[in-house]
Length: 331
Picture (cartoon, rainbow, N blue to C red):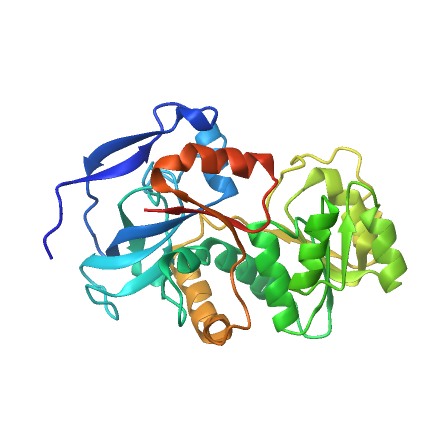
């Protein structure tokens, strides 16, 4: 396949507000050991992209400095040591950076086939959220059938994914969101009860609804919710923290419930994980989750799709937090 010498990409000449981003031109990346080169057709916009643009989430040393963590498109070149993929295959995948570009490298262990009937935009809406939710809610926190889970930020990309996955595997789901419209969306996705955190105290609602509390909480708020999260967990419950939108330092939290209720507090970030760890998550997704996507039992919630050239507007929408589900770019 003949490839162009140059590609367009979203350049970040300095950190700052969305309008610091510009479209520039540069050389295509070259597929190295264990990598596939993909012609990008769609890109997922995620909170880490915003944080990197603002200068608070630097990429790993060996990652592309170009923004973006998930894409879908067509394989155009294959690096040494790669098996199971061919030029022309349609794949989506979790990148280590570089997704905001017309061509992008994906480690072969982080690539997945399109689910049946999916186009590129739908497929690109999957990797970041499904890798994150599966690793934290199922692999680390061990959510199982019949357990109760509270999911904060229920209408974010992570939240809409977590609600659906938890219900698909037999959990009872509670979620928080910031408006009646968003609460209704959570219930439609499978939450038994959605809590408007602007008008209700979620810890009080969880106590009233469950009596003993929930078995697991998936939290992206951090310090601002830490004490109430501990109060909302049942005995032997697990708090899984995946972001700090409400701060990373909880100075006055009462830690006694951790001992009294034998609680586990855990968390992780996806980007620094090893290729082997990411491959293990990918393999789990292909065997346990992709069949549900093939059958239409799960589906990404896509709020709006922008043209690649409108990346500034996409980031403004992300920062407004008014969306329900994923924000996408089409190349």
